Length: 154
Image: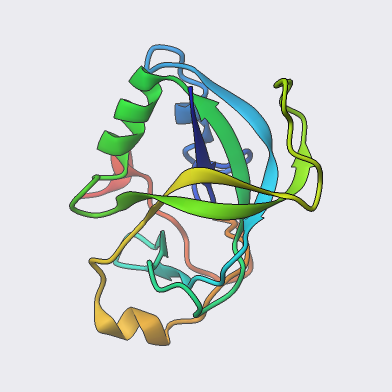
């Protein structure tokens, strides 16, 4: 099992969360909430208003998200879903644990750090660095940038 940190449309209550729970794609188990130790620019960009975490450590904000334990089939699905490695790249990130509900032998304590994979990108338009950054993504937030699901795209 692999730990994956999600910060966008795959979180609970977001448009693609159902994909994390689709057992035909593999297994994903919610472990807890965390935020990145380093700051990153989390922006909403492109004509479909997709949340992008730009791989530019030290800029932006500490990003909030969820940690999941996923099996190999789900990891392969997530790589495909995230367009890895062209659109997003899967890299290790250091996280501060905010809540842990996962039942593992060595569960990290709140406030401690843990590592997980996250999908960030180095392939973005330079002007995206000028966009507003977010510490937490909500597709239904007051930013007014409505996410367009894949099924609705042209």
